[in-house]
Amino acid sequence: MTHRDSHPWHVGDDQATRYAEGTLPEPDAWSLEKHVEDCARCASRVSAAVGGTAAGTVLAAVRAAVLESAPGAAVSEEAVPGREAMTPSAGAAGPTQAVLGGRPVVSRFARLLWAAGPAVRGAWLPAVLGVAVAALALSYGAGFPGARALLLAIAPVVPVAGVALSYGPHADPLHEVTAATPGGGLRLALTRTVAVLAVSLPLLTLTGLLLPASGAPAAAAWLLPGLALALASLALASFVGCRAAAGVTGGGWLCAVLAPMAVAPGGAATLRLAEQLSRCLDGVAAQGAWAAAAVLSATLLTARRPAYDRPLRP
Image (cartoon, rainbow, N blue to C red; front, side, top):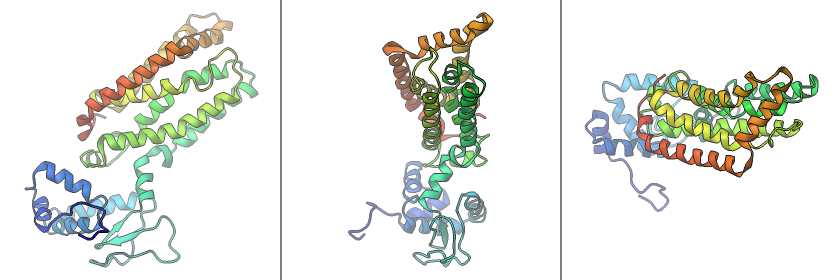
């Protein structure tokens, strides 16, 4: 090991062989899998060892399918085994690629883009934009005075729906594979949750600021409830699956804030909604309760982390 090595250890030939044969102890195997995510030299050694087994052909086909589906994962036409690095041709487009040990390596940006899931590479951003534009059109186009109240009622459910659509067997055809890897499971679920929140929070909060208050709480009052409901959905998903968890948390919130509208006289529905939102969102007590709910949900999620090491229910 030279002084420039960034890893305190590397995979030896014996470890690679035992891993390929399935005889390496499970803790050592997990450590090895995590290590090769960032160490190309060891990844090449392990890849060569696995390639010599009966499962090598199957794994090569799976790897090729994953790389083909990854954004910007263009594979070099000539992968030369043993070559330390190969840059793409001058006219190549997309993120910088390299070929290490005869296998294509996707750039860190492309891996992050894939890990973020539908929040950044699907229809999620247009959907959130649609909610924002609809609220503005309802307020300034149709003259509806309760547009902010309605937006605040819907906004906390948006991240919950995003989490449900971004993680799980229904959202990822390789869910069973990724859930069993060190980079999958809860780590991947949290990455996609952060991506969903990063898209939803600024857009919906800015939209709320542009809408007339009309008795509704502040535009940012939904942020803590949105975070708490997203964390509660993740924690509950470890028991019942992502979609069922989102239905319970998101549906529970909507029932709580929209129920008074069902019994209100026709002209007082908007006023009743604003009053109910004020009870749920305004004040130190309400926001403190949501903060406590977020902490409790995060604690439960931490305790339920092992459940994410295997595929969740649909």
